[in-house]
Image (cartoon, rainbow, N blue to C red; front, side, top):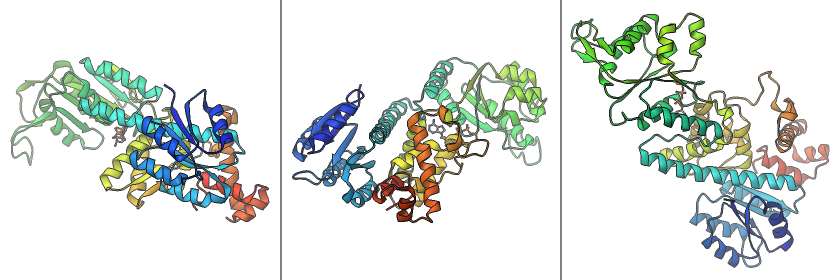
Length: 456
Ligand SMILES: Nc1ncnc2c1ncn2[C@@H]1O[C@H](COP(=O)(O)OP(=O)(O)OP(=O)(O)O)[C@@H](O)[C@H]1O
C-alpha cells in the first residue's frame, strides 16, 4: 500500500510540484487551507504531513501542533520562507521532523527529506505492530524488519519448534541472548524452565557446581545440597552463552551429559537423568577454535546441529532507525521523559555510524541521550556515537569509493564532509563560511542546521 501524504499549502505551484514528484510512490492529498486540512486529517491516517507555515487564515505551525496533539507520533515537515527559518528551527526542536525552505532550489534534496520522513513513520508503525504481536505471544521485543532479520526470524521460528540443539553465532551485541529467549518462547518447552549461564564470566569450579549441582559437604562451603542447572532445566531449555570460553575439563563433562542425558551432582555417584534442549552462543568462530585446538571437535559436532548466524547491525538495512525509535520509547518510559523525535541530521548520523558494538552500542547511545537530555528533539550533536565514522583503513567514509553508494548518499557524504571542513576553515563563523564557499548565508545556515553543525 502506498504511503499517504497530506500537502497543505495555499500556493498551487507548490502543491502541484509535490504531487507530481511523489504521485508514483505515494498517495498525495492536497489542501489549500486549514479547514480543508483539518477535514482530511480527521478522515485519513496520514504517514506524512507537509505544511506551509503561512496559510490564509491559519498558522501552519499551530495547525501542526493541533494535529500532533491528536497523533503524537505524526511525522511532519514544515514548509517555510527563508525569512521564517528561525521559527522553523525552533519548531524542529519541538519535534517536527524537518523544515523545507521555499522556493525549493534542490528537488533531489526535497525528495530525499520526504523519503527519510516516510522511513521514520514506517519505523514507528512497524515497531508498534511488532510490539503488540510479540507481547501477545509473551515473546521479548525483538526489532528487525530488514531482509537479513526477517530471514533470521523465519529460521528461528522453524528451528524453535524442533527439539534440536541450536548454536547462535554472531558478533558481540547482535542479540544472541535475546534470540535464545525467543527460541524458548516459540518452543514446545515454553511452559517449562528457561535457564541461562554465561560460561565466560565464571571460574571453572563455580561453573561446574552451577551446572552439575552438588551434595551437602561436597566441598568447603557446600552447607546444603543444591541442584544444578542440568537438573533445573529438566523439560525446558538451557542456554550456554560464550560456550567457546568453557574450560577443556568442562567441555568433556558437558559432552558426556549430552551423550547420555545423565549426570551426577558433585560429591555424589548417583546418576540422574535429565531432558533439556541446549542452546549455545558464541561471538567467536567455534570452527576456528576447534582448528586452534581450544575447543573439542566432538563437542563441536554435538552442538553444531543447527547453526544460526546473527547478522551484525551494519548488515540490517533500515533496522538502525527502527531500533533507535524502539530504544527511544523504552528509555522515555523508563526515565519518565519526552525526548525525541530524531531530526533528519540525527537519522543520518545514526545510519552513518558503523556500530561495531552492534545493537548493544546503539542501545547504550540512546540510553545516554535520554538520560542526559531534559527532553525535546534529538539532534546529531546529542548522539555522539562512540564508534567513529571511519572506514577500516582509517579514512573518513567520504573517501570511500563513491561508486559503492547511491548518488544521493554519496552527495550527502560529500556535503557533510565539505561543510565540516568549511566551518573549520572559517573558524566556526557562518558569514565567513558563506563568503568562502559562495553559498548565500541563509542557505548555508539551513544546510549546516540539517547536518547538525549549528543548533539555532
Ligand atoms: N533485535 C533486537 N531488538 C531489540 N533489542 C535488541 C535486539 N537485539 C539486541 N537487542 C538488545 O541489545 C542488547 C544486547 O543484546 P544481547 O545481549 O542479546 O547480545 P549478545 O549477542 O548476546 O551479546 P554478547 O555476545 O556480548 O553476549 C540487549 O539489551 C538486547 O535486549
